[in-house]
Amino acid sequence: MGIGTYIIVSLIKIVIAVFILLTGVAYTTLAERKVVAHMQNRWGPSRVGPFGIWQPLADGLKFIFKEDLTPPYANRPLYILAPMISLVTALTSIAVIPVGPWITVAGVHTQLQITDVNIGLLVILGVTSIGVYGVALAGWSSNSKYSMLASLRASAQMMSYELALGLSLIGVLIYAGSFSLRDIVDSQAGTWLGFIPKWNFFKGQFVAFFIYIMAAYAETNRIPFDLAEAESELVAGYHTEYSSMKFAMFFMAEYANMFTVACLATVLFLGGWSGPVFGPPIMQALMPVGWFVIKVIAFIFIYIWVRGTLPRFRYDQLMAFGWKFLLPLAIANIVITSLVVALK
Amino acid sequence: MHLALFLIFAAVCVGGAINLLAQKHPINSALSLIVVMGSLAMIYLLLGAEFVAAVQVIVYAGAVMVLFVFVIMLLNAGVEERTPHASRVATLLGVPGLIIGLGISAWVVSRITGLDKIAIGGPSVMNGSDVFGNPQAVGQLLFRDYLLPFEVTSILILIAIMGAVVLARREE
Image 1 (tube, chains in turn red, yellow):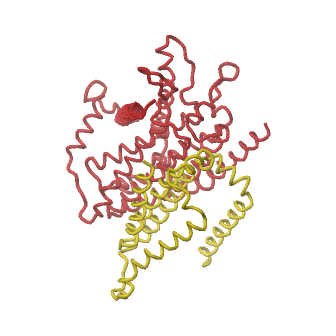
Image 2 (cartoon, one colour):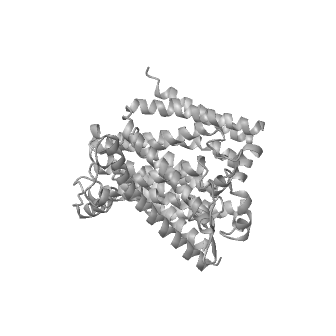
Image 3 (cartoon, chains in turn brown, orange):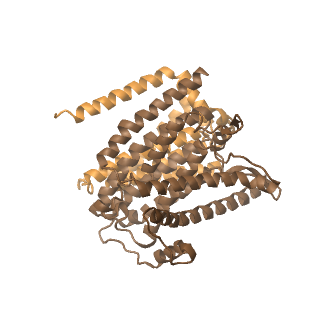
């Protein structure tokens, strides 16, 4: 592939990936409102279009036309920079996530992934760790006590749970022997006895999977770990002072991060795009992507389900849970996985 | 291409470092330091050390600097106070003297270690990039060839952690 073709193909993939991601983000907000509403015996949004399907569009327009306020004593450059950091880091992570195998379109053989780097997982961890600054600076630059308390909570929480998150992935890395997300998916191909898939989840990494889920919920500031927004204590947390599109950017970043977490869980523990493939050639090309999307949507649904079910943690419980329960469990998982692999 | 990228990130790195010293507010200095860490990671990447680059971002730009920012926010540190009577000799001679001193030491170090033979993006770096910077190579170096220094360093860090805990809890 020449350099010109490479750039064009990459640009096309980037545009498609960002478009799908942002559409997914918009419709996850609707899905969340609908699902939570039905769990609470309400209807949810139902006025804009059939079943409220144009609600995200209406919300987006509303955000654009709202007045953009800046508090008078805010640190203006950082106040503007903070939502940008949040959104950019949230969208960047999608670049290394593989959604399907190699395909050939119009004579160009390419992988369904913007780029395959041999440190893919580390890229995601690095980008996520930079994302913390969005929340931290938003709270600090707003010059408001609620925002400030929330961003202190968020920074401490994200630092604590990043450890458990990172350690829970090591078992998977031991099995795959690579940081490349494509290699990790390839290492999970095949089945036992013809029907049990060789996903890392079934290879004995289910403890790591649950550690990952819990740490990831904390990393994305979702219920039951949403102490950074805790509306009953802190108004709206770190984005109390934000309005209009700046608020929308934080909102989009949160949902884009949910997608990253869901995609990563799918790739690392649930076998990525692997699943039964049959039918005519066009179906064989599309079904792996279909399996990937189904797994991601299931994961997003669990996110919403948990939100509709669980109350919020107390802050000291959150810290004790992260440091005294998740972290030792993650280390124990690494030791046991290494022993199993070494004795095989 | 490599040279252009190196010059860009080297300029960002040095600019960030100067900004770190020039800024009066600690949080701006901390953010400049993050920029320095980030551009250092890019320079590691240009040298073909992708694992070190990723770790640089995760550990330094991510974890360590978040702690810095966290402490600055927690203490609500204000604008730094500077003494108005700076020495005139230091102001006039400081910057040129620093540049000359750094230039001489860079020249001496590169002559002694042979670093001046390596060009950015040149053959010696690019040929070695497959074996010397990827995670497998770093892992084998750390956990096989340099296992003892690695373990000794970890014990040293453990002692530092315990020292910090003891100092923090002394009042009880």
